[in-house]
Image (cartoon, rainbow, N blue to C red; front, side, top):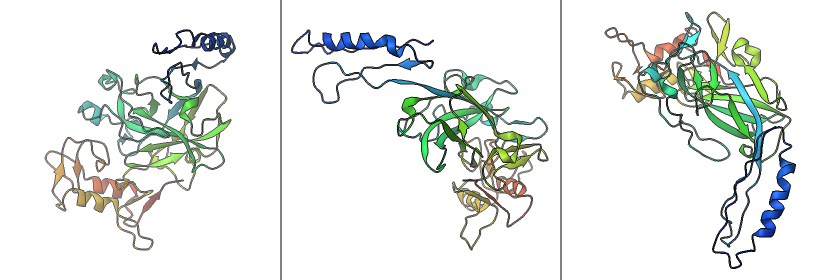
Length: 323
């Protein structure tokens, strides 16, 4: 049974130095009631928002659930090992702060000390991802989100230590409520997002979900890329322009921009131009380099051709986000 953490801040400029005692006594009387929660509960005190002297006790918050998620990114996936490349980490190019905007309160998530130093074949960090909690009935309604890290073996972990499951608190939700079931989605800065096929029950302490085992784990028509001859599945790679499609060529009707041409333009329109040792959205396979054409010496693959291959060599091929 978890204990309630209590912090009370007293403003010593009170006109009546004893005026806080009734409030404090009432507060202490309620502590045993809150200690009965099965999830960890917390109380914090904050300055009175009205600016008046006295004690102001903030809302209670507690752990809603933990997430133990598994997914793969197509870009850095290696079918020989069924793991993803950690080239960005090994090149010391992963940013300490996440590249996403969290909801409902924009915050910056910072990786814990030593997280990027882990070089394990399975547990080394590949990149940042964004985990979203969405409404069970209306999946387009976003309730909360949390930046996290994805390991080489597909496990998605807390940025604080690079090992723990992702935790959501009651105060993370907007509106602040405790849903009985939710959809989960995963986003990456240059891959198409995915969302659970069905809502997941939240009243289980820890929600375990593996997107990689089947196409039907995610909503939509072919919502994930087949990996290793379709034995695994992952987020479609190559979405460098940030829409909900991946294309090698432009589509005129309807108008859909080519991601490959986006790479060409980002390199200044030069077929042999390149960006080396960068953390960049145009780096489709997350090898830290961006090129429109292949380079022989040293060997650097074309990110545009990688997109072409993702779409099975179909010039007019297209991958679509499932929601």
